[in-house]
Length: 530
Image (cartoon, rainbow, N blue to C red; front, side, top):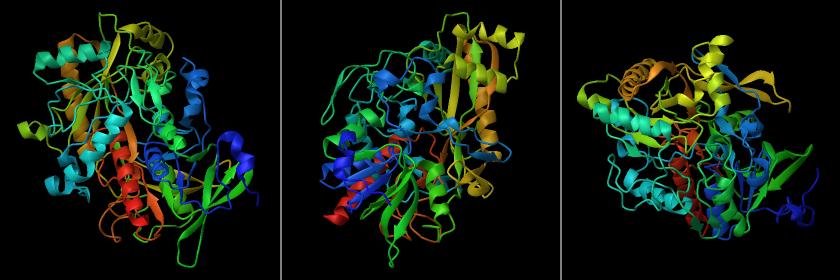
């Protein structure tokens, strides 16, 4: 088997020989892997990150063209099943050095304390085995400060903040201003959203200066100026400053283990060759589809039978409308305005479901919008052309809502194989009664907002986002895959750090919480190895 030596890899900035037993191998470089990689490197650990996708230069490789950005998405086929099959690719995962953060919208709201107590509050899903104030808030503060999150001085929902956002909010684009107008007419509170995109030039220790957002609007297709806090220009840059090695194009397939069950090496393919990287510990951070898939392929860490189970996907219903105003929906940060007045809408007796959702304004690029019009209302030909002629007058609102885990929603290995000869993942997903009621409630609320704002030709696009929960954390190996720090109950030197460990979906976007948990996992690991 070939060996990567220091001399052979120095041109890529790599420093470790595959025969050297590094302190840790991190699989995946997105929101779960990148902060952890940086933390371990800062502590002087010898760390190697394996990333299945390529490394790109945002300034030269990110064209202002939606279709040219498809390389950012995980485009390997995933099989979708169930009554509400999930869309993948651009919707749910990314590939490349930086993972899904290369094309996330940079929306970074915090979870609220009751998000972690779904079982206690409603008797459904599971409570998180961590404390909001002690285990999340300090890391939320740290992540927001490091990334340079732009956010409001006063946020109306959740616990009072112990630290201000480092930068003021980004300007509200057309959709955000229209949502603000409609909500004000109905007495719904709104706030500029927290976004991991810079409203001003910002200095990151260990990284350097990053320039402010130019309102290019291509957050979901790659930021070419480095204003969006994707992992490649933030935590991964910091990790490299402290000696971490990142190997792009390294697709992990297997693990070597000793007689005690510990992982001794990670097996991966690179440029058609198979390599083994020896290591002392492994951090699996490949996302809620590839993480359980890799474990199932290797029959690993599944004594609980929960790998691939408890799958959830955020409800993400969108409501679109046309306006007399010139909206230009491609301009500015896509999600500029937020409301969490619907976080627990049952409080005013208007809802009959568990959990809740947030409301956010959304911008959209033309290719994405035309695809949705074809898939949603089913427009085609002249009717689609007429609708697209109004594109510059379009604005949207969507929800990001809780989803409960059900026995009928899960991931398994199919009998179809991919280009590497490995079984493709098959993902079953059907909305339950709770999600259906939530969508119906949100549909009425959002249509009311758009009516108050003066929308015409209003239509709905049902969707789901953010696959979550396939390797649940918990206190007991009988019902969970990992412990509260992400450590496998079955394999003593295996950790998982991504949103597959979430016991419940949360009623907010997951990126900030993934990063916070990543740092917490790293700190716990370092305590045990010092």
